[in-house]
Length: 426
Image 1 (cartoon, rainbow, N blue to C red):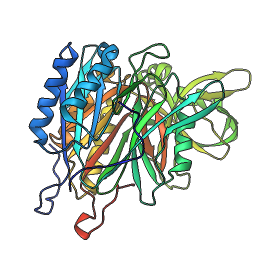
Image 2: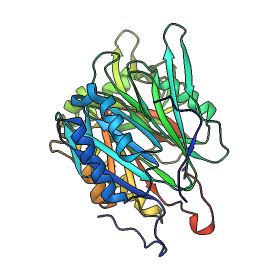
Image 3: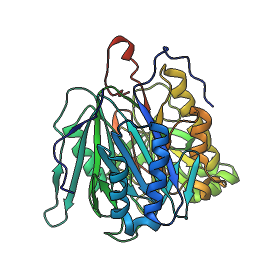
């Protein structure tokens, strides 16, 4: 298939939510899972399940996620999905595992397919790569800027794409755009991961689609940490090294924190200590969700510095954090409940990008994130994959996360009853 150009316009015109106006939704979603090892029969099974949910209407957007077992047959699978469903835009990738409905498939063959009918929604494909030789991005598919808010679904290869720089580039070109997505997985060396855009399969770069028009896309980003110790202002720092917190060596502050923790928390801190950088430094009160969480990489005994996985500047407000399964579970439930409490339009579908460090190995039982979404949002079509990093907004900034669950919730626009129609950006 020729490489896509331009944009496509979509064809054809357990949680409890307040009742919506008595009108049928124009938006329709579907999700399917196949555990078959043979890709062509798996594609047929997926297509049958999608059609049983969407009927004979058009498939405007399809998202295809495959486990490492199907990586070498991605072209065959992509071609079969195109032939059976004729999606206007198809994106996808390989992952460490796949998610569909209330199931999370880890370490076993699995293919997840999510599809949507989005009348009136403009869909613009995106693809670019990064040249190590020239140290620059190469834009192959780039949507024109639009004035209205929009949403990006992004999938990238972590071994060939500097994702932080890519997000910064996208923020410059599309400042009113909210991004969701994840980093492909399943491969340990460059060229082994797979990215899907339309009828083509790539082994490097970044692909995605921009959505603009009458659909609400709401973010839930669960970073899954609990606050510990005091909050400090960074008084000396350079690059990703914090030298002083509140006028005292950062290492001394860290030692004071460890002394104040319980034995259990101190043991957790040895392998799950993080630090949160306040999103809004002028708040009077800081709670879960008010910080961008980054890993504490180590300490420098000679300088008393604490080294973290993010560039930090003097004047920033920070607080140490601990990541554990109970905190992760509580955080996701609280955020989903908060979305329900402040929205009038109930969810119709969702995409889930969950860290490969979560799952059964982290929570001790399977299907945690998928079943939490079902428990809190109801039995809506959900699909996604276990990623090597998750993309989601924190405040008004699109960032790369680790150990998180990033959810894109799709619903009718909040203002549709009044004639308003645009992607919802918080």
